[in-house]
Amino acid sequence: MLSNFIQTRTEARKRGRVTLSVAVAQDVEVLTAVKDAYLEGFADAILVGDENLIRPICERLEMTGYTEIIHEPDPDKAALVAVEQVRHGEAEVLMKGLINTGNFMKAALNTEVGLRSGKILSHLAAFEIPGEHKLVFHTDGGINIAPTVDEKRQILVNAVEALHALGIEQPKVAVLAANEQVNPKMQATVDARAMQEMSERGELPACLVEGPIAMDVAASAEAARHKGIQSTISGDVDLFLVPSIEAGNLVGKTLVHYAGAKIAGVILGATHPIVMVSRSDNAEAKLNSIALACLIANRKKPAKA
Image (cartoon, one colour):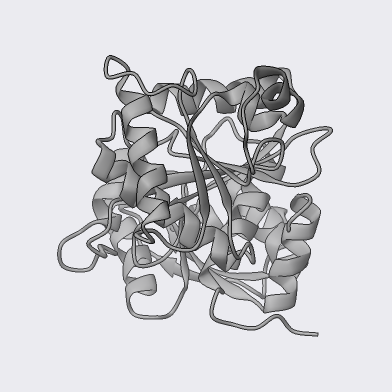
């Protein structure tokens, strides 16, 4: 169980360094996070972009001597070069720098050199919420707009496999809806029950799925008791599967801006983890996102003593 992001970064350091390939790296906030990840001992970096812009930032941040710079001044070409570094095994994690998200993802999914795996791409967010005893994870509030039940299955598989890589052997999963009753007029409840049944039939990676389940019941064992609902995951959920991108976006931003939660995020479903942080994310969020991606990339390596 990961209690907080300090523990996440500590575990990443124990597993050993992972190399990041940063696309269009001439961004001071991104490079600050890359520097911190290096100093904390869990990441090295290949910086791809305009060396005339990258090097002065590195010198200002005192990053000289331990990062490789590949000069490519054209942003779209730089993104492709960064992707190729991952594709060819020179790096294990791809990270977005100072480039438009659409252009970045176009490079990441390039049919010739990209990181397509045949799986659906999905976003996994991790939250450190004041008063909670462990990190909680939400998917997918960042990529898939209105997923079908089969797309939800694929999103759940991506997330559960990532949590396995983080050391959570049997994640407790809440498939969220407005209430616990299946209602044919509320597709989220129908899909949620289907997800639970898939889990019961052994069609999903190791996890414990309940759905449909409302947020209050998922978050609070007391709420479940008050409503007379029998649940084995209430108050101890690892992963919340949201019904739509709006739901995930609203819940995530509410946690950050009103509950003071800390956040990290990673894109799953490609051949390698992808860090695509928001410009509004602070330096700590960027650092925690790198750590999360490094742990997932390092899933096959045992922790060092």
